[in-house]
Amino acid sequence: MNNERLPRWKFRKQKKLEKRRKRRQEAASNRVEPESTVDREEYERQKAQWEANEVKYKIIETAKKKAREKEEEARKIAQKKWEQTLLSLPLIPSTTTTTTTTTKKEFGLKKKNNHNQILKTFVRSNQEEQIPKRKTYRERFLEQKERQTNA
Image (cartoon, rainbow, N blue to C red):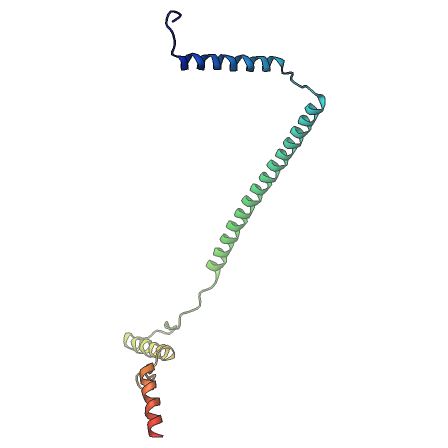
């Protein structure tokens, strides 16, 4: 490699990099690491404060987790109690069933009559008056026009 000449741009680049490396090494050797006690004390104080905050955070998070678990357990217990009370409630006898023994024909008639009474409260019969059909805008307009011409 000594015998061969480098192109000018490669030679210049090598020299430039060597100079830069030399400058950096000199700057590093001249650099004095400041070991001031004030900076070290400040660092230690901040580190202790950070660690204390970390401990507080962990305590708070564990307390929150325990509270969530207790709430979940209480919710499950309340759900079980609710289900038990619902299951322990006495059932109200149905209106369609009767306590006396009846024949099949009578039972069918009673059931049918009862069914009709229930339906009458919810469904209107055909005998009642029908709701009048709602008029369109055009129909109302024509009626108004007719009234004006007649008047």
